[in-house]
Image (tube, rainbow, N blue to C red; front, side, top):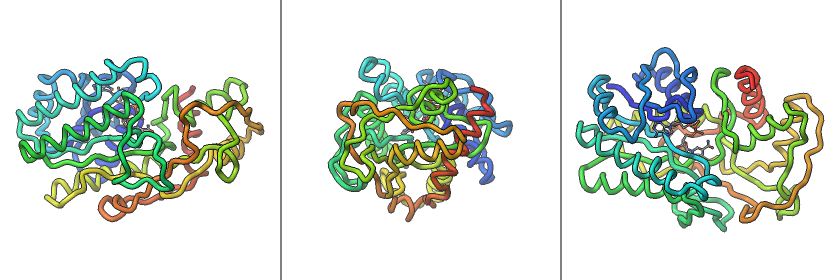
Amino acid sequence: MTWLVTGGAGYIGAHVVRSLLDAGLRAVVLDDLSTGHKSFVPRGAPFVQASILDGARIVDTIDEHEVTGVIHVAGFKYAGVSVQRPLHTYEQNVTGTAILLAAMSDRKVDRIVFSSSAAVYGTPDVDTVTEDTAKNPQSPYGESKLIGEWLLRDQAVAEGLRHTSLRYFNVVGSGDESISDTSPHNLFPLVFDALVAGRTPRINGNDYPTPDGTNVRDYIHVADLAVSHVAAARRLDAGEPLEPAYNLGSGDGVSVGEIMATVAQVTGIDFVPEIGPRRPGDPARIVAAGDLAARDLDWKMRHSLTEMVSSAWAARRAYGR
Ligand SMILES: NC(=O)c1ccc[n+]([C@@H]2O[C@H](COP(=O)([O-])OP(=O)(O)OC[C@H]3O[C@@H](n4cnc5c(N)ncnc54)[C@H](O)[C@@H]3O)[C@@H](O)[C@H]2O)c1
């Protein structure tokens, strides 16, 4: 019984692989290294360098490693870039998922956990997002993740696939100094990049209707998120029911201003962020309830904001960027 982790050489996937191994489960990684790093894959997990667009390699990997379930983390995650590159985004996230599902169907692998995103909700006009909040993706990226969820749902109807989709909110921190978020678009790497380069980090708008005027978002620690993947995998192995989708959110937001203050405190670099204009379409607050995931997936916030920032900073310095 082995779990195939697509995208297991990436920031989140590498944490998921570690959690699987820590829980005594077997894992094999399939990753094309387009944004991932082979060094992120722990020794205990065999590594296959291949794309999810290559169905034959997926089938071979399933056979060779006796794969019984898949945690599908691989994907193109840059929502902003997806607007310029819709076809690429759809190819990676929709065609790739369809090819993966076809390979699973071919080899009778009948369980999957899918990395979905808060982007399926777009810019929700509610105080707290629940799984039932209207889906209104506003980028090809968000659309492609929603279609990914539908592909799983439809394979469940057609072939009895057992599945769940985990909708991540803002994933930060590090559970292991050897794994760093190297994304050029996420807030933490952007702020750290600015500080290391001697620039002052910038806040996009401080006139929102929030306590300190800056955007409020739902930040979750990557190691907490990884634990819930293991819980989902175990439930699938045990034949226990799962919801089609879970929000991995804290129910409690943190403002960008609070994050900047915590970064200053953790790094010891004293700075006052520059205030830029609002970014068009950026909602004041997006916060999600994680109640369903807490009930079924051992989901809870085990890390404070300070731990999120300090672990991310330590991993970044260890990574040497
Ligand atoms: N980071 C976040 O805050 C966040 C939030 C919501 C959802 N997600 C989703 O979680 C997943 C992982 O995100 P991440 O932050 O770890 O990103 P990441 O870029 O670090 O990881 C993605 C991994 O997938 C691999 N990959 C990409 N295309 C592939 C392909 N065609 N075949 C095989 N491997 C491929 C990459 O090389 C990389 O290792 C993505 O699907 C993303 O959409 C991330």
